[in-house]
Amino acid sequence: MEVPPCTKCGSPSIIFQRYSGLHLCKKHFIEDVERKVKRRIRKKRMIEQGDKIAIALSGGKDSSALLILFKKIIKMRKDVELVAISVDEGIAEYRPKTLEKAKSLADKLNVPHIIRSFEDVYGNSLDELVEKAEKRYGWMRGCSLCGVLRKRLLNNISREIGATKLAVGHNLDDEAQTILMNYLRGDVERLLRLSPRKEREEFIPRIKPLVEVPEKEVALYSLLHGVEIEHEECPYASESYRFDVRDFLNYFEMGHPGTKYSLLRGYEKLIDMIGVMDTLPKEFFELSSCVRCGEPTSGKMCKVCEFLEKLGT
View 1 (cartoon, helix red, strand yellow):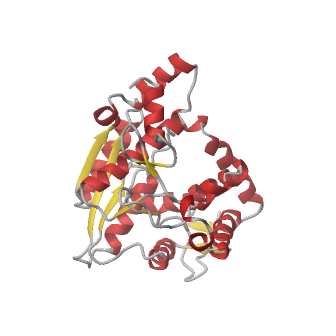
View 2: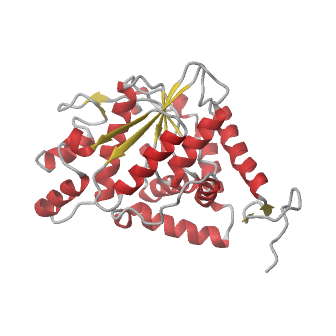
View 3: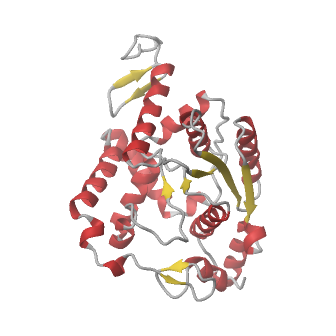
């Protein structure tokens, strides 16, 4: 079967972008991904002079691509520092393999690497917490529990090391799923809080340089840079609401290429139109302190402490 030529140079292509109609060879595909990421970084002013950027490195395709890209982008800058952070949630038969890959990549790129576990910080692995939840309540979504605890831990480690930004490997698919999930739930507040805003000093600003790159392209970019792609999914992923939204979006994208980009662009236009910071009352973004741990929360107790209290930890 004949390989279609690259739209830009005529060399054999390695990918066809249905949303753009382009066939791209290896060289032009890598350039396309890096162009999208650099454009996003410039547009959102994600890198500033003197930044110390923490990279959330799970060892998967997205975070690996993120670290490789940042290393390329700042290689000529002496004023920006990178530190990789990995969280060991404690998922048997899954996390040990990805952590090894994270260690290997950080070493290869000569980036300082910090690993912290749920067990060190919360006293239990995720598997143990889910087991406790099943005994007490019959069932609890491991994905929801993990997301809350992991997000807190990444923020706290970033704060401890003096990071000015926390970069996460959310790709276009992730962002489109998040936007659609909040639309479907009618969660307007959470939807609006996705937009950039001034946070309390306890929060390290999160940046998402990969949100204009589809998941499959992130995977291919990683593969072309020597990253071994792990095809095994987290065992808790299938329990999540996001899992169903992902399947729906992928199905819709097949029939209507560009749907994921449309969701992202439409959301960003909506935020620009309503001018979130100007039209919403100040109280909308104000947070109090958790009565148990002192971390910022919209209620009396933060979600981390709510979960841990329910589980008796």
